[in-house]
Image 1 (cartoon, rainbow, N blue to C red):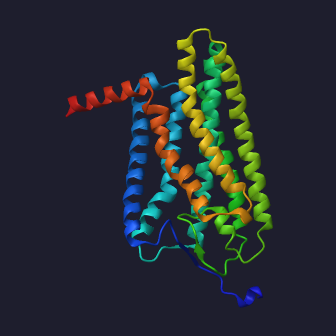
Image 2 (cartoon, rainbow, N blue to C red):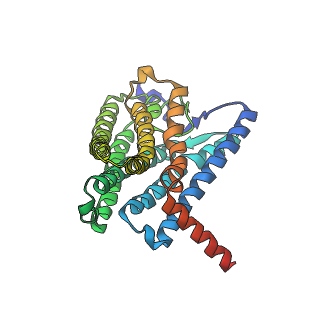
Image 3 (cartoon, one colour):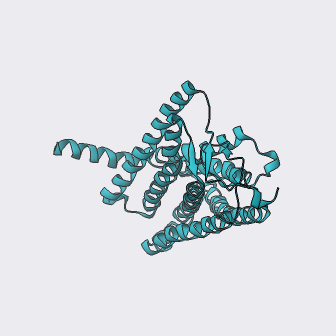
Length: 312
């Protein structure tokens, strides 16, 4: 059908995780709790790091910014998701959908690069401790975080600009709880080859370079740890890295598969599981894995709570 005879859509319908009203209420409560834990946990980490001078080190500088990114990342999708669990009409404007997609790409990209910076920080601390403060000076740390946001902004803008060139004329139902680029491309009534090439190329270059940096850092880290003669020293070194590796692995695996797999093998359930993992669960788990299991952070939290009680 010619484009001029087709009606351009002005809004989409987000079908979400379920159409069962009772299940939607249950899911609302579950994801509300997850969101509150995410925001509260990451805010606590940020406040503690800022308040305790003992935590003013490169590692905690990155943790501070990771917590900020996690709050942003979760807030891009979860509040609208919660609203739709209770709303009769689960609509979002086309421009609003593209805006949400932009912020998902921006926040997710910043998260990936900050995780890579954290891997490099652990490499510098374990493999070259004598030059650690030189390698990870305040200026370098600021540049790494600023670079993470700048590169992510370019990545998000590049894909968003090409999305604005698409036309949507029906259907208008997105089988997802948020506006991510892969399901959005499936609804276009114009050719999406350019978008798919741009998305695949940018994700492969962007994610691969970041993953390569993380991989190289951990190859050197593991090699150095294995040369430590003291068993207790090896255990402590591995404990500071294992949690980071688990989250990085899950984040990369689910995110990379979501944005690079062919549309022919797309699965609604699988897409939603992937998105829940890297958009919602990872931001909640990060403060627990990276910080709340850390003895220095737990000590700082204890000090802050005791101080707060004295003030009360």
